[in-house]
Structures are given as C-alpha cells and as structure tokens.
Length: 116
Image 1 (cartoon, rainbow, N blue to C red):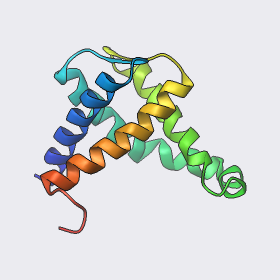
Image 2 (cartoon, rainbow, N blue to C red):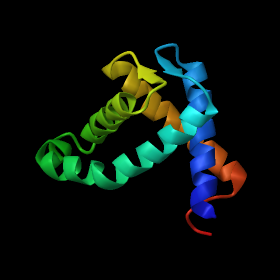
Image 3 (spheres, rainbow, N blue to C red):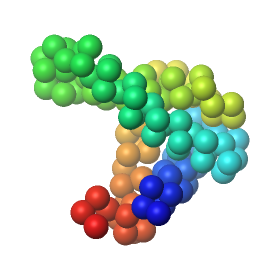
Image 4 (cartoon, rainbow, N blue to C red):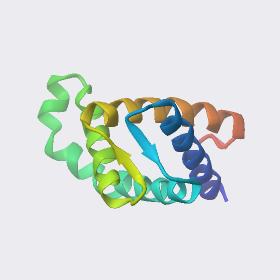
C-alpha cells in the first residue's frame, strides 16, 4: 500500500514539476504514472550501476556528481516513456531537483515517510 501511495505522489509531483518547468512536457496523468514506475525501476536497477562506475568522480566532487547521474536517469526515462519529453541535460537536472523537492513535500503531507 505504501508503494502505491509513493507512486501516486511521485506521479502527481511529476505533473506539478512539468507544469512549472517550460523545458519539460508531460502529456497526462497516466503518462505520469508510467513515468513514476519507470523512474522507480531505473533508480532500482540502473542507478546503482552508474554510481559504482563513477565512484571515483563522485568522491572527488564530494557527491555532486550524483546530480549528473540523476539527470542521466531522467533523460533515459524520457527516451523510454512516450508523452514525456525533456529538452536537454540542464532541464533534466532542474527537473530532478524540483521533482525531489516537490515529492518530498507531498510525501510529508501524505504521511508516506520511510520511518512509518
């Protein structure tokens, strides 16, 4: 149940974020739900591999390279999900930052925190 709530909150946060950023387009809420599932799978499967491969750069940049990895995940999701378009790397980076903030706020309001 908690997973379903998190997916719904992430989808709604993606809709809000796409509305706020002109370089990101999201067709409808169904597309946002598909995007939430794809982002969850990419974060589960691809992101750890990217982190391991880029560990030296991540250590040298004191973890700031993780922002680049997040942008790469967003760009990959835009290639996989029809109806979700990102205009470039910088929009993907900004989308990942704003999505993190908006979904964090929405998760705290919805009460779906990790310590429940």
